[in-house]
Image 1 (cartoon, rainbow over the protein chains, first blue to last red):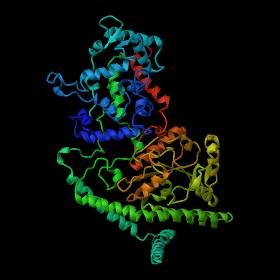
Image 2 (image 1 turned 45 degrees about the vertical axis):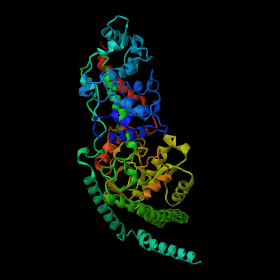
Image 3 (image 1 turned 90 degrees about the vertical axis):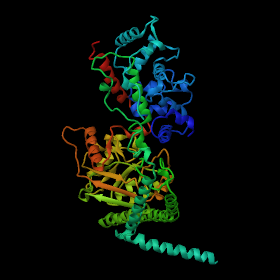
Length: 185
Length: 433
């Protein structure tokens, strides 16, 4: 395991041991030893399959991991997971602006989730896309009218410039509870 | 000439030793205590190795044991609490964050997929295959490891292969011979004798040390024995202490020969592959079998697939619809001496057996449990879950509601729909907005 991967997880205890375990996990998920994870590999995870957003996270329904990251080989896998590491305390102001933003910055977390909604990757969540994602999340349990009503309200609340869609900037103003933001390795 | 003579002499002494020290005692069910001595030495060596490893690991790593701590600290509260709201709350864009986090947690670590790969050990047991997180500690430890490799591959492996070969041949020959006899109590007695002897030989072929608990509850004739499934060796372990009628598909090759031979001596229930798909046919034949009180108890593994012995997964209801008395049995292997789990996607049967024969030993506990029957008003699924819980508690295994079939197939849509229902209820209450 080369050093570029270790730096992604710097700060968590024993980064190399963690990487090793993630590697074993990657190998366990990669069913036919292809060297990368396909949509089917991820869909086989039971707990993910019952997650309302599971299909999007596994890369279905629109732009998925392959489009966003290319093949999900092991470095790609680690990159995605690194997004959800806790934000370092000294992340805000003191960072050298010439350095690339760390993967787990608030902005990058927001970008990651924004892409779950923005199916065609045009930088905006249109009303139509919102409907589609909501439909994915609730299945057949909610009627079309209820869904449209929820969509309209949500888009209206977030839309500031009145273009009927939620841009990334508008998305960043959404209030997100602290505990949703990360998981702890 | 001299070389050939010498080789011949060695071979014959070898065989005589094997015969005298292992085969004959097996036939009479007597133990000479050699394996006990081996186990004692093994345990002492592993304890020593553990102490050395603990001394050698640097103190600041603070990583007590990677196996007991998960990769992630998880918040296990259900969706309703995690989504910070009461019923009838509105959809928020931030909900996607909650589900992403949960989803990524599942990708990193989920309850089920980890059950299909071998258990991580708390401390290394000097086998390369379990060396996930352990680094070089000292020369002495490495030397012991090398010695271990030599002992396992050059001494134990040939011995075990010889035994296995003898055991299986005896089984096939023995059962075929006994099968020639007319049906009588003599035939049954002989069939049991052949059976038990060969099983004991095969168990020695794996250096197996098995503790049977609660023998008074051993499955009786006309009943059904159910157990948790970890590997094909489970069958061997159970049949060493009693005779069962097996249920399963007819295979080709070596397995097929063994199956055909066994069925001559006593009635097992083998199905053709095509017949397995017809559930009514299967149930009917099994019912017929247990109705005959003189027939041996049926052995069934309701999980349907091998799990890694840390948990018990969903029991398929088919076995519990047949009726009759269920005799649950819990089997727990001690992973310190050898990993018995058969990861069929990773290893085929031959490499699995090879791994078994180059481990230190197979040590396991078998608990026989009091018989259970279906109660009034209980359907097959509830009954299956009741038995499953009992086995999990007895064996010290965790209980999972998931289907072992997840090893190969996707989650059923019904599970996903349940989650969607939960979420939808939160969004829209009971139909009001």
